[in-house]
Length: 320
Ligand SMILES: [Mn+2]
Image 1 (cartoon, rainbow, N blue to C red):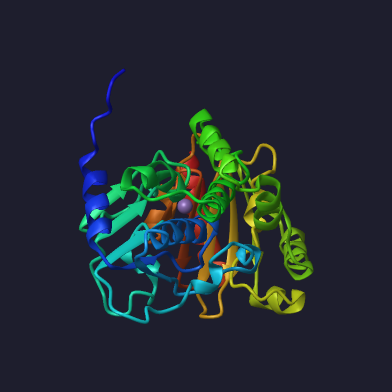
Image 2: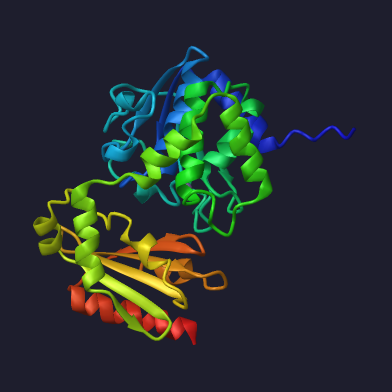
């Protein structure tokens, strides 16, 4: 049997964690399942080794993830000093928002976005991973950190949500085996699937309704808008699209789906989803955003009409 060579980055991270006493883990603004699952997964795993951990997010934990063990420990600002900072699922430092409160160079940057800027002192970035939690699931044992039932539930939540229930084109048999291993440790797949991915509020569903009535198609591009007015009328409290983009991306024959969401700060949040073969991360990058080949986003200044015409124009040019 071949003995795998120890990866120098993993060895370095293991040493850093081993030598630290107070560890700060942080993820991105508008946290999704991978942000929360990775934060809790790593945070709780380090805690079991007796070290002090602060899990920090600029925004609060979304309602659909407030069933995960440990979520009450997440705070919006660090309360104390620390000797190790780990960022999770952040492609650049702006993504942490104000959560780092003065600290500026994270020690360890763990992420799977191809647009990652390698801003950490140590960068563990793997764009082939379906989620940051995939990197954590395979690395925790190498860092001598245990995958307990609670850690497994957090990590499986991240895998389920970032793959939209194991149906994105980057899902491999390896990911499925990893998910099975997490189930073996006690993670409850149907419960996680239902709570984090399927269940939604009445208000969110009404918000979808507003978006669906404004659905448009221009050639291979389908798109819709969600205005501040729509949000008020539906009673939806989030600043996001309530996942409407995933409904649009199911439309047959559409190469690209786009949702424009008017923000309370006047900017327009744009989300893209693409069929395999189209790289929307490139389009998002040209507007100052980022993401993955098949799913990307940007927040753009301008009026809804202006942003919509610029983005659809650019997207259609890109498809020619
Ligand atoms: Mn992710």
